[in-house]
Image (cartoon, rainbow, N blue to C red; front, side, top):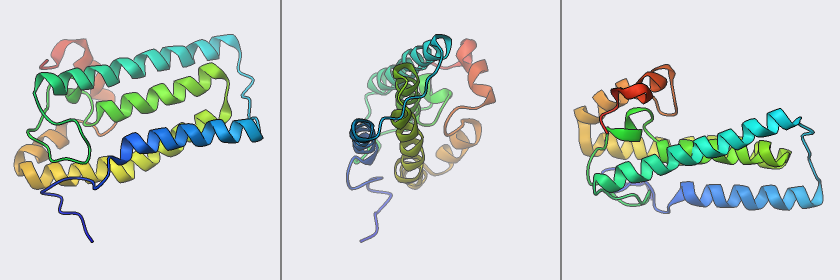
Length: 170
């Protein structure tokens, strides 16, 4: 049965489940066939920076949605279009932050399976989360969504850093 994108973007909250399943799969694979990256300490420190930065973006997205008093569940209808705060730098800062933190964890922990799982889950979330949520938002908010999507990258883009420097609405 096709999804009514005007009613909701997903039947299940796919993106959170995809993160969880990918992490479990990476740990399981790593216990059977270890895949160490053998990265130097400086590269692993970059992994820590990615974890912290990803979690900061994730948290900023959650706070922004909380301040807007809108639904955060990916399987429920959007109450309103949020375009300020973290949503001025990415249309999906919670997913993007989670993916960045997940990749950073793999780099910091020197675990190849976690890095690979982070990349696979990012692709899956793009397809099963972001695309569906964007179809939902377009159905619910029409031209307002179209204008927002035209100025804000799905992931992160060149204009994101400029917005982070002080031109964000929240």
